[in-house]
Image 1 (cartoon, rainbow, N blue to C red):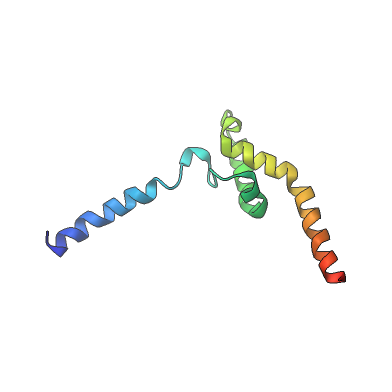
Image 2 (spheres, rainbow, N blue to C red):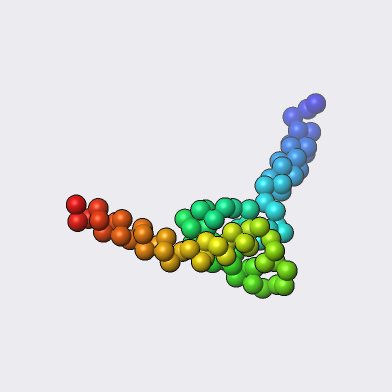
Length: 90
């Protein structure tokens, strides 16, 4: 196969491979566990907003995880702050 033909074949194959990496039906930040959302709280908020925009999305696993992380974010942030203050005082 000539190299010029490879340039016609490879980009579409690469695009199809990347398309499988993100499941649009799981939201803009979907497919992550609760711990990921706690470490990426801006993206967690985007996911929670997306989940609330349409009925039925609350049943999706990514919406459940984002909501659970949202509920735990306050205590997670407090623990993180206390840990930082403790280090600074040591």
